Each structure stands twice: as structure tokens, then as C-alpha cells.
Image 1 (cartoon, chains in turn blue, orange):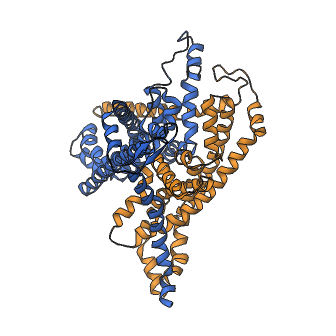
Image 2: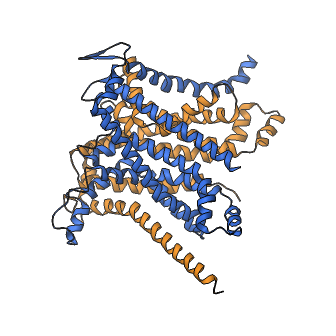
Image 3: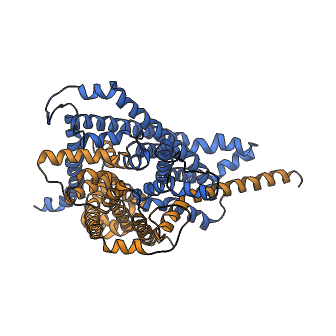
Length: 288
Length: 268
């Protein structure tokens, strides 16, 4: 009894999280894995063990096209976020001389995370639309004569919107990685006669790669799984994998296929996370 | 001296380039938010430039919108419960990761952190499947369970990071003085990680309040605020959404200030 009372807190501390993970993560994942092998038989589904759903996903050009499009959009979003975030983080860590300004600018980039994600997608819909703010503004300036439909409902608008939404996830890890680089390393390479460019290329950039990898992982995975922004700004050709999953669980009512698609998404995300984990660990051991 | 002039000029040039870049990035991030706010006060149905005149009509419409008010109430209910639950599970999970070594620990860690990178849609449909299978009715409570699971990773990373920075000697001293694990947690560990818990709780609350992908699949007849806004948006763009948006931006700003004050560490 005394033993139990002494160990009860410990048991709870371990037990609650483990139980939660079992019931609300492993069990649900197990269920979609099972469903992904089932058969669709209108109006319901039949328990079965067959790979038909996966075969459909990898042979039907319709799904392949969506998959490649999602890959392309997510890569573009990660690349755009990187190109914006890296110089910004570099400036904050190495060039900005005022501590207060640095804190303010960092906060300014992170703060939008606290503002509704949905709103940030909506704003771009109102800005880029045919009757939107940008078009009417350009017409007001007499740069264009009639509204252009170039801005909304295409891949450009999707990349802009997703970059806008997910850029804080690129800034945070890169900033942290750059901050950890000791200043005397760049000083040493300058003393040894390296030009600023060369010491950036050979010292700073390699040491910040773990942060870059983490940023790429986050922005890529987040845009890979998004279905709200594509729906709001993507237009008819803007369906991403997650939109297709949502349709399978909604109007199309094909849960087995939707589950198989979700499993593919899960595998893509898991492999990217483990690759970047390895990169980060390599960066850590290489750095010391 | 003369040798220095070109490098000084180069440095000046580089500084100017960096400043311009930072200014452009800030414009990219903040002009859209100002556009949102400006059009919430504009007296025209369409969101086109130039602004035509000032009105508070859109806010007046919000005040009369009972569906919206119900949705706000639902969101508060969901976000409070989800935050409470995710803290009750997340704080012990962070302690387990920090304190114990056991087989399968890396799998445990990865599973807990998975929802941070895992698209919400996977969490949403996998839990939807399970609830359907068990015969649960979808409701705000199933949304709470979904949110608590999806936000677990956020709480664990924040609390774990703080635990890592605590000196081990504190806890050892408590044990040496004869404190039970529970007492040493309450008297030694908890006060030291309190600000991390508050910060994680605030962040979870905001994220849950704003969550769509999981809610989309797990909610029954009741709408949360983002789901309500989302269904309005599907019908088209209206300045009423801008008005809700402006209020949300202001509240978020307030919360950020609260979070900064609450999580500020007393270092000195």
C-alpha cells in the first residue's frame, strides 16, 4: 500500500501520456491502415485485404497528377520561404546592432502565427481576386485597363498564400541555428584572410544547415497537407492531395481510398522527418 | 586609411541592401493585414480600391449575428477544454522524456511530436474513423479530443525545452532532503517550469481557437468560429468577414502581449 502510494505519481506520469498515445494516436492510425485495404462496395465498404486502393493511387493519372502538383507546390513554398527567411535571419543575428530592433523584428515575423491561419488565407483571396484589392488598385493607378485574372485561382496564388502563412516556421529554426554559431568562428576565418563571401560559404552556411533542414521540413510538410488555402485561392486546378482526401471522406464517400491516400501522406511526412532528423544530427556531430 | 574606404563602402552598401530587404519583407507580412482592417470600415459591399467611405455597419451586423455568437461560444468551450487536457497529458509526457530512459523512448518521442509536422487532416480522419467505429456521435467533445491530440507536441516541446535547462542538482537536493517525487515536483520543478506551461497553454489555446483541419472532420452539428467563417467564405467575400478578422487581429495582439509578459523569465 505504501509502495503504491509512493509510486502512484510516477505511474500516472508515465501512464497518462502512454495511454493517450495508444488510444488517440496508435489506434486511429491502425484503423486507417486497416481501412486502406478494404473494398468500396456501394453504399458501404467491405472488410478485405487487397492492395487495390494503392494500385489505383499509383496508376490512375488523375491521382498521380495531384500528387506531383502537391509536391511541386510544397517545394516552391519551402524554397520561397527559405529565400525570404535566410537573409532576414542572417541580418538579425549578424548585422543588426540594436538588441531592441532585433527583438522587435523577430517578434514581427512570428506574431502572424498568432493571427488566425484562416484569415491569412482569406486576406490573399480578397487581395488577388479579379474584383480584388490588387486589381482595383492597379486599375486606379492606370497600370492596367481591365481586371486581370492572372493573380487568383492558380498555382502562383497558392504559393504566395502558403508562403505568407508558413514563413515563420522557416525563420524560427534558421534564426536559432545562426544564433548558435560562435562569432569568433567568422572572425577567425576573416583573420585567416577569407573574404566575407567565402567565410559565409564555408563557415556560416554549413553550420546553419540543421536549421535550414528543420525549416524545410516544417514548411514542406505543412503545405503538403494543407487543404484550406488550396480551396480558397487554388481554383479548379488547385486541388492538392489533402483536398482529394477530404473529398473521399465527403462527397465521394470512398473511405478506403481516402485512407490509403492518408497513409501515403503519413509515409511521405515520416520519411521527410527522419531524413531531416538525420541531417540535423549529422550537423550537430559535424559541428563539434 | 585609403585601403579601408572601399570595404567601408561595401559594408554600407550591404547594410542598405539588407535594410531594404527587411523593409520589403515587413511590407509583405503587414500590408495585407492593414488591407483587411481598412476594408472592415469601408462602406461598400465589394472590396475594391479606392476606399469609398467610413462605416461601422459591418460591426453592427456582427453584433446582430446570433449564429456567429454561438460559434464564438463554442470556440471558447473547445479551446479551454482542449488546452486543459493537452496540458494534463503534455506536461507529464515532457517529464517522462526528460527524466526516464526506457526501451522505445525514441518511438514515444517521435509519436508525441508527430502531430507538429503531420498534416491535421491525417489526425482528423484517423480519429473520425475511430469515433465512427466505436459508435460515438460527433460533437464538440470529439473536437476537443482531436485538438488535445494535435496540440500535444506543442506543449511537450515547450515544457521539455525548459526542463532541459533546469540544473539537475535542484531535484537531487530535494531528494537528499527527503522529499517525495510528488513534493519535489510541486515545490521544486513546477515553480521553475510555470512560465513555460503558461506559454504553452496560451499557444495551445490560440491554435485550438483557430484550428480547422481537425475540426472539419470531427465536429457534429455545432460550428466553431473558424468553421463558421470558413462556411461564410465559401459563399463569397464580404466585409463582414473583414470585421470579424479585425477583431481577431486585435485580440491576438492582446494575447501576444499577455504571453510575452507571462513567459518573460526573471533572469536578473
